[in-house]
Image (cartoon, rainbow, N blue to C red):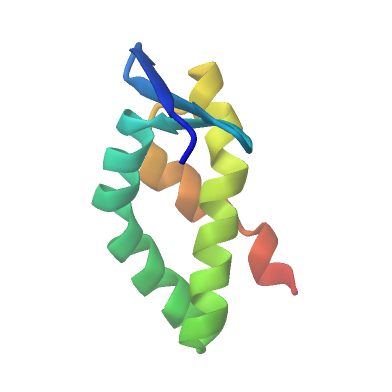
Amino acid sequence: MEAVSITSELGATTATHRRGEVTVDHEFVAAFVEQQAAVLRLAVLLCGDRRQAEDVVAEAFARTYPQWRRGTVDNLGASLRRDRGSLDR
């Protein structure tokens, strides 16, 4: 088994292993845990299908993360609820 090196700074942990580098933003993970259920409930109501709603929510979080990293997200829940891109399928 290959060794894994881990560094931590500014609320993020970076693990490097043989397949590359993986960074975990602990603040974003905490915000995800806090917001996911409410955003998923709304998406289920709008989509009418839980599986599609789960995809919509995952895509909304993925599209919001770059803005989060730049520090341009003041209210994650509101940003996620405004993200309607996945609903236009």
